[in-house]
Structures are given as C-alpha cells and as structure tokens.
Image (cartoon, rainbow, N blue to C red; front, side):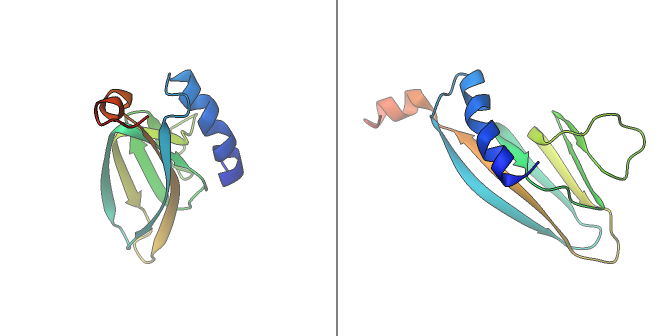
Length: 115
C-alpha cells in the first residue's frame, strides 16, 4: 500500500468504525537492526503499512505480512493489537514505515471541555 492510498483509505475506515474524523495520524519509520524483533502494543490504535518491506515479518492480531512466506495466502496491511516485527535479515539494517491511526476518546475530550 502506498502512502497516498493509505491516506485515502484511513478516513473511510475510521467512519466505518464509528470514529468519523475523531482521530490523529502519526508517521512511524522503524529502523530494525539485523535479526531484531520489535514488539508494539496497539490495542487502541491501528498501524497501516505504507510500503512492502523485504525480509521483514509483521505478525499481529489482525494478520500477517511477510513477502517471503509461502504458507500464507493473504498479506495484511492493517495491524492492531499485539504486533511483532522481525527483521529476517541477519546481516543488514532494514526499515518499516507505517501510518499510526490513533482514535480520539470522544468521552474524555468532552469531559476535558474539548470538542
């Protein structure tokens, strides 16, 4: 998925989930050392993959993204929950780029006097 496609997809997805325009975006560029395994916890937000990283496995509660796997028939670009990102390259640094979508808690915003 490209950044442009993700930015077009996100507003529709957030409306589907009932958030409307009540969310923030954050661009995340992770740099992974050789064979590094990185854990992210995203129980209240989404990570949208905006590139197809080579030699990287992304496994989350929503699915898997791994271009080297022959055991899966679907790759997931939207990740949530417990996310494990593994650099499968033992000899090189690699990077992974996401757009993090953070829904705003409408109830908390109203309690704080913000709209």
